[in-house]
Length: 289
Length: 232
Image 1 (cartoon, rainbow over the protein chains, first blue to last red):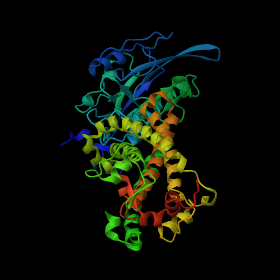
Image 2: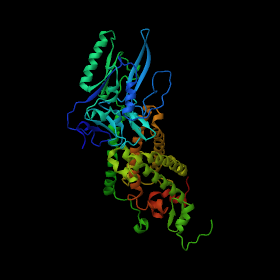
Image 3: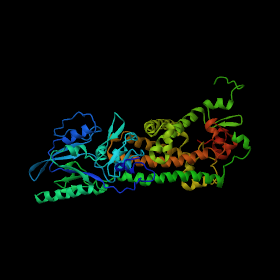
């Protein structure tokens, strides 16, 4: 029996498409306001602590950033970028983690049944016991989030603290944030909060402030307020979507292949009944030996 | 050759260890031992790749993973099975290459219409044909192309993080399409080599065929080895 909040809405490699639960649950989302983030990395530390992850050796790349990119043992990373806008320097900081897409490319690409699931509350999670370490999810994810661990042979990523959320707590990163630039609630509430904040920013001069909630993946359960409508400045894809190759292969090529194989088997039986064997004239016994 | 004690050994088998295209009593050695081993090597590695790849391809064939100890084991074995399959395919390619050139009058013998005619048993084998017919030669070259396709895309899929995403997407797609073509072809290959054409399968086990089998399926080849009109 699954906990009600953890009912599976969608599962990887399900034969009949998505397994849809009947419960109509509201989905949960993280709200990130990059305009009030101070880059303190409290969320990074909270994530490492709550998820019992070992500290990954940090690297010095001439930036304030802890690591160049997410890691199998580092699921929450503040990305720092220095951008010059209208002659003034902008220090952009964005909290990077799994976006918990409504249409997850990782889940779509995954060939192991149940290794990636989307719960009814919108959280996309990896089940390490079912993961086979093939890295297809890495190909399917437009945000480059799932990371392979050589230690376990499995993929790992942010769980949106599903273990906390399931018992009514907010994710660890949200809990740790000192400025209130992070928030957690229903997707609906977080989008409304984001839209309000975008209007505030626009009113104070950031004319092209925007709420990043990309349609290409059906929206994400991590909504991000950006001061500038330049997702690439924040190391975000401008128009993310489930890769066409993954869709083509899963939705068209694979079913056609199964049909072709079945047709070949039926064809062979049909042929044998219609034409029979091509017998060698002469002694059958000798030939069939 | 050293003297063979034919009192206890099967002469056709003994001769077939080293030689092919020779007549031994009532039989003709079609594939000597080396040829058979290489082809069985290709077959076994292909099927190992098949049972470890198909459960990853689609959950419909998930049960196949159980044969090797689960999906995770299948995924570990699969690339090595694929590498072994490629090595065996290379051996087979050079082993059979000289017999696989299309002769002038065989051009077009692999086209769908000709293949259909063949499958309706309406085909008259060319009296001047060689050891293999145009369909077999077509299959040989298709399998060669497929093995290369499997290898190139397989390497990408083995080490996906070393390649750009678009290369990964294309590789998975091409690997799948190659497999589908292979699967359909292999179903027909096994059918033709066993129940559809009696007397054929023994060429892969015992290594020999009968004279009447050769007369029906490869008259040109029979003429060559019985010393009739020779044609390369």
